[in-house]
Structure formats: C-alpha cells, structure tokens
Amino acid sequence: MTFFPIIFERLFFPINKEVYKHIQKILDITGENQKNFNITIRYNQPDLNIEKLQFSMDFDISLDYINEPSAFPNANLLGLSFNQGDTVNSFYVPLKYLLDNRNEEILKNESHYIYSYALHIDKSAKINLVNNTVKVSEDIHQYLYIGITKNSWQKRYSSHCQNMKKNPQRLLSQALNGDFGKIIEKKLVIETAGLTEEEALDIEEREVNARSYKYLFEYGLNMIPGGYAGREMFSNKKAS
Image: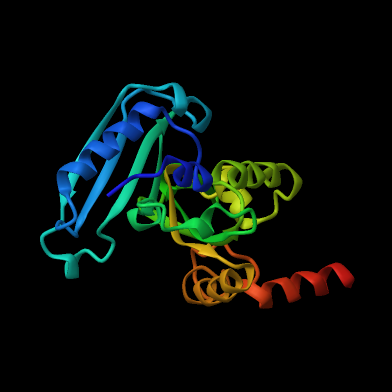
C-alpha cells in the first residue's frame, strides 16, 4: 500500500514530510492482508495550530489493530490531533482515500467532500446567572455541523472563522466563539470524498436531516436543510 501525501494535503493541510515517511513505514508493516487498523498521529508540542504543523517534528505515531470490525465500523482511519491552548483539535479520514493513487477524482478542482464537524463543549464552564443564582451544568455535549466543500479544510476552516465576524448570529459561529460553553475538542471527520457537486448535495441533504438540523436535533448546528433544499431556502431568504 502506498500513501499519497498530495491527497492528504488536498483534503486537509500540509504537515511535516517526516510524518508521511512514518505513515508509509507503518503501511509497509501492515501489508495487504491486514484489513482493519487505524493510524494515529499525536503532536506533543503545546499550543499548535494548522500553520505550524508542517514545521513540527514533536509527534508520536501509533498503529492500532481492530480485531472486531463489526464493533468498530470506522476501522482503517488516519487520525491526527494536536492541542491549541487547552482545546484538542482532531482530524479523521478513511485511509482508503489516501492510498495507491486510486482517487484521482479527489485531486480535481471541482471535487467535493462531505465533512462532519463536532464540537465537544463543556457547559459547566459557562456560568449563567438565573434569578441572581449561579447555575452550572456539568454535562459535556457534542454539537454537530455537517457541510460540503471543494476546498481543503485549511481554507474551509478559515471561511468558518471569517463568518464568526461577518455572521455572529449563526449557530456554528456562536459555538466556535464559546457562547455555548468551553470547547474541549474540535473534531473533523471527512466522511465521503471524491464527489461531484450533485452527489455531495444529495448526501449533505440526507445527513443534515438525519443528524444535525437544528429544528430536529437539540445540538444541531445546521440552521438550514442541507443540499438543494438548503440552497433553495437560502435563495428565497435573499430574494425576500
């Protein structure tokens, strides 16, 4: 199995080339016969960000075999995580998209992917005054946003950050801004890649309605339906 960094960077962002070499060494060890495993990269340097990853060499990489794939449906993932302050940033993608250059569609400029972005938020860190009494919730909740993009995550996340200023009323902007509580972890999963725009819109509409539409799910962050239905609603709002 051959790992292709160019596909990883098309989906995510550049990291140090030494990491790519370690990933390839692990794939050489596993061989073609081992079907169920995860590779995890963990950066040890404190207070990193995406831009610094291509320079950081302070990481550990591990291989975890999955003995019962039926109990672990997301086997064969590449995971990467680092701390930015006291918030964990984690990223996951099925390894099948990164191997053997069988995914030419992903490298095309118009190729889209579906992503889920989960924010694990500690509401106990958000202290609210109710009738002049401090009320603290001890629960950590997962807020979920599902989207599509044809850009790398580095560019897409930059767009989300810009929206925090331009559209602070958006639920995702409020969550990223800490309005719902302290963010413990930001978790990105690339779920399906190498899609046409039409394919991506169809999947997004189905997934948003099933998992993250705010009117159906208490911790959903999608404010409009996904896919074509969402685009139609957005167009109608702009026209009104």
